[in-house]
Length: 159
Ligand SMILES: [Cu+2]
Image (cartoon, rainbow, N blue to C red; front, side, top):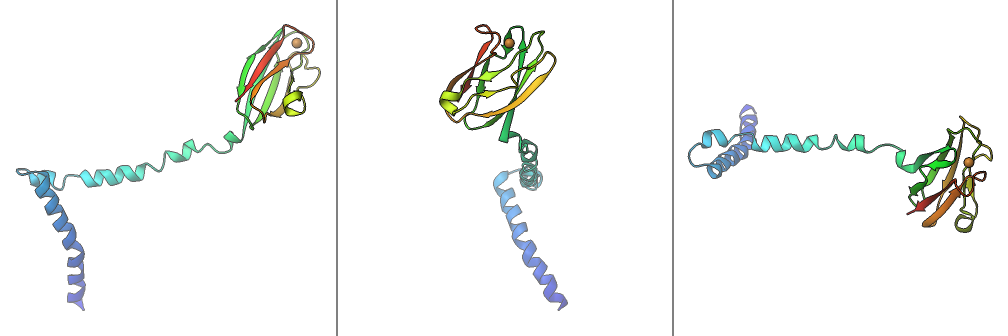
């Protein structure tokens, strides 16, 4: 019984020893004692297992499901006035009034999306209005403030 266990251990160890000897023989003619064992395979294994951790932070949860775009309204313009959005993605617009006058933000999307998306009809100074829009057709859609045409306009490029 005892001898069986010992011989079994040797069976396990023997191939490893043979491999490292063979590897040492290939690696160098003179200093195989140093380079033969020399952490090459160990380093590779360590690096491999380390690769799994960076994927977790970049996974980023539910952020890709929707996008929030803040549009600042002053007297009398939108910032930004040229917006790009991905097609089919739910966009939350925050129309933020940082001007002294009343503004609104109306997206003229009725022709392509079946309806216009818009903020509250009256967005008072120092307030904001939040609304959502999903654009299912690629192209360029205009938006405007109904009170300050033709100055206060912008475009949304759906791509
Ligand atoms: Cu306005």
